Image (cartoon, rainbow, N blue to C red):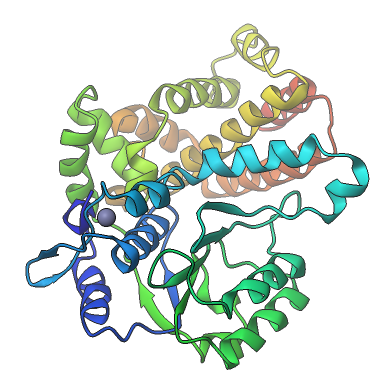
Length: 364
Ligand SMILES: [Zn+2]
């Protein structure tokens, strides 16, 4: 898995590798870009290249081998969601007193620490930054460089202030990565002490080409759909659960059917009845709501004569038919009610009933 396996954003990758070649890597780098653009993948690649035992050179620039003892251990954190889930589960199993004092951290190599946002608030807490401060001033244990990756740089205030202290006096042998889809949310004083590199979304056509190799089981129109739904996020597109998306969209269309004049509610009730209580029902409902937003948006694009922005391209004729029946006002009201439904779900209203109410309220 050398740098050449990273798709898109060739200029940013080259900049990072040139800085590696000059042996003068910045102490802190903000890597910004949309969800799924590959921010974490790229930070992991740099961590490997900094510490790789073989450190091969490709295209005249430093690379990493991917198979030495150090590369392999760093790569154990490549699928961050899995390591994160393990860390959260381990904390859940602690005694209450210990639970409160334990913060989520992911470390598969002693010199590379990943600091994910801490649940349930999903923000970086001050104790996590304190953990960084405790070790960052000590020389690397096995590698050449200590690397700290804040996988979603969303800090509570005290944590941001603590981090600022480190950025004011960074040690020679450490690099901090702040990954974010919203760099303006970072304190200006943090931003001014970091180098800022941006990853842009991959163009839909480029993403489709990539998916042709990565997900050969998908048909061309399915690849086109996923490329648009994922908004240029390559990582998100690669692991996209197409079947779950299509199922949620089928349900969303069933919810809209009575409002579109189907006159039939039995299909609607069959669908809403399948949205139950519990964690599984929650995830299913969240996906339904996200998908419903994308359908309403597409109808808006079609009504405003910008069909090139439509994301659900595979059902565009059906959406166009629906759009002719839906006035602007109806679409905006529907989006507003969907927002109300979303906040109602957070208060744990009965799901199937809330969905029934939402669907019937849209009928004219
Ligand atoms: Zn290596």
